[in-house]
Length: 317
Image (cartoon, rainbow, N blue to C red; front, side, top):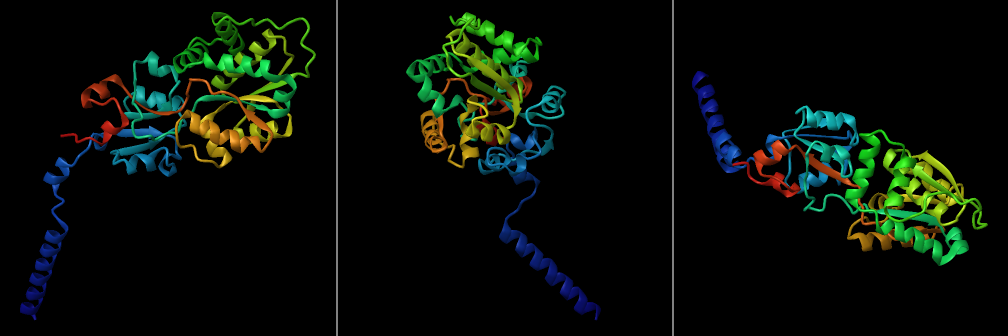
């Protein structure tokens, strides 16, 4: 019996060895050679990141797999603090977060197309556009044309770092760009244009920029700021409770159920077609974008020689 058992054991060892050879040696030597930059780093972002194509799914498809993932918040203070404190090496933040510039962090170039374009794009009820005409559209398009990403980041810094009021921030920006910001004693006789925003600081600043520009041009304006998320703002716009809101092109495209892929013009056309059927006009997009961004400290960028997302998939050897 003992001989039979040893023969069986020997056969099992041989079978295991043959299986290992057939599958390839995945030992430490080869694993080390295949290690990527990302495999040495800890990634932090929102809890939903692992299930999002524009986050972990898209990164994995590009050959980027981190040593660990820490579920934090959506580009907020938990993520920023974790990056600053070294608890994570790579953070998912918003591209206009002023702390990126304040702390000298490096925003990795999205050279793999992980996130859609997110240009600031005003949307307004079509009946308002029809009533106010080309002059109104030209005013809004002119304001949008002067909002770039660097300028938007600075506006956010004035609020989140300096603690300034959004209305005051908007007034200064408009004055610097040649616009009147004082509301006229008498409007142009139009029904008030109800301007709204989402419930975060940047959106309120942008809404104030457009609202004050309208008032300076003689239009009557009413504000319903910090209304809430898109689940609240979109139905309010469609029902006529509000008339105008600065949007984010790629996220809006996703929300409308259309493809957010392509350049600014392609995404703009897609949301224009989708929203047009709902009585909403999509005006010209601003150059400014605020999108999800992968951010590292200057030390991490220098240590691994990275300045783009694709660099995370490079060999660490």
